[in-house]
Image (cartoon, rainbow, N blue to C red):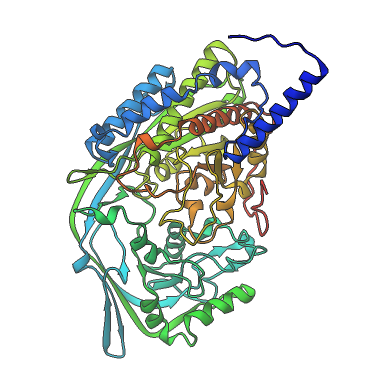
Length: 567
């Protein structure tokens, strides 16, 4: 029933009071009043409006269903996901770019380590100490038995642009190197190592590749002794999920991989014993490096270590990156690329348990597919982006970013003309406290409208464009993970291989929750409203990247106090 009111001055005052009272009541109940966003420009509105909650829900309910068996790489459920993504790219009208196919083959080796018969051993003074899981663990795609003298190489970093080199003054050729995890000065906001955030040098893969380049035959990684967070070794036991499996997850590696040096993660106690002949204890060594960034590397007298790995099974297989192209409209700029990405694999099944992977990363997979349809629809009925858009859903991310590392070395479009990467990994939930973050990260009280952005310090231009486009969407943008030194978030998703190639690349991420890497990560728990808003922001941001005259620049060395965008 519609009631007409006489519009007197007193009635206007009454209406204003009623509106104010309503806002107070909403605030009291914890319900946010609707945010006012600007209208989307007409040239891009058609595609923008195709991003709908009901479509996202339908697709993700299928992708995270029991029928797909948790989408384990090299298993049937993931193969179904691969074919589904390819069919969606075809329906959207994308162009196949992998030798006439939507599928880029990725050859893998799968292996299961034999924990009982794998060890790290120290020989010194005629005696031997032996460590097995969990005091020492690692994996390699073939059986390993290597024995060599040991050198201590600080944090294992060679960073010429920062005037820092842990290998200065030591000979690592033919040796096993012992290095600290993470980076120097990680709690100092002014550190040249990106303040309290991570640089590209902090990740284990980069460190092992650096040791390999210096001639090392093996690597031992021990947590930095003066840390203020759990080590990787401690976190393995803390996260849960995979630990409950009747049969442990297999390891996988690229059949063609530049990395061919075995490495092990060792406990504090093992590291301390190996460093006993260093002339200083581990804490003193780290403190000396942190004080003035002067290397403390040295040979360790009377110290010989053996890395011995055995596998109970070894096989090979093929998975696929799924990729499709929407060609740009500009005759010159279409040679350049904006890349949208996610990963399609998860952790599979164990007995009757299924690791559904709805958020991780069914949400990102469905997101890339939704954007492919949105841009293609807009190209047919409105504006086509000037630069070309490449949509990729990577393989085997859960096994070590294998699909994205493969594409970074076997690109389907030139990396030197790839202008930005928008990577989605877990964009469907509200961030809440979990075993992954408890005591390590402050989580805002309300995350229902919050998007975490990772990588902002490496491209302020990228961030500036994203923030400008957010006026049409109204998300709460959060940069906490760019200032985190405990969780190593920066290099834990598929944008990272492209960061290593100096491409502006952000990970779009809604945060951890108690269902992360558990069987309970199911489609019914997704916040589809927020997921749709994130994809709409990505759609608008990608359009800007594709059309703007000056694409975002990459900052190779952001330095201290740089990761403060959005503060």
